[in-house]
Amino acid sequence: MTANSAFAAARHEPLDSLDDFPTPPWATRALLRELSSRGLTLMNRVVREPAANRGFMLRPIAEVTKRIIASDIHDYGIGLPVQDYLAGPEPDVDWTITNPPFNLAVDFIERALEQSRVGVAIFQRTAFLEGQERFETLFDRAPPAHVFQFVERVPLHRGILRDPDETYFDERSGTHRKPSTMASYAWFVWRKPRIFDAPSLHWIRPCRKRFTRPGDYAVIGNLGATLGRSS
Image (cartoon, rainbow, N blue to C red):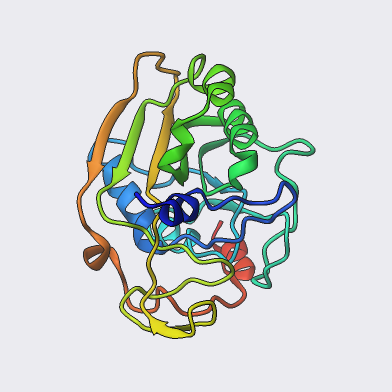
């Protein structure tokens, strides 16, 4: 790995950053497939997404259950409640599934473990496994049951969801290119009742094309109204 690629993989964020990197729907469908294959279907389960961003993770979740509670600390214009997940009381749910800000991920996980009856699934860079402080405060006392590691890269871009098959103009390089990333991503899954054995590691085989649906990269409208009618 070159110095430049190592820096890019780190993707450092300011402490007060919104960490605005929308998650491609196909990556969430991959998680749902992994859970379903282990008997952990979300059908008729109550699912919370507390860092919903522009709603792209909600699309595949809504294909499985309509009982969704979604919010974000910032208003992204899709009609979801603006709410700080880490402040104030929250009702218990069956599952919490989200891509939280990297700097607040441990706080999100701890709160989700308190308020989720069945499980918690967190989308993060594989580098989330590193760090002595994170190990001592989280993984040593509450290890995940599963780590689902993507074999192929999951391209995330600040402030926009880009179709990996479409080219765009990159202002930094001054060239047209397809979306890419030097960062590696995985799903970290906790199950209830808690399992304190070593996590089981699984690889998610290349699946982007299989799990991509028409309209996945289109701008989302008033999703809040849709969830309000169906929840």
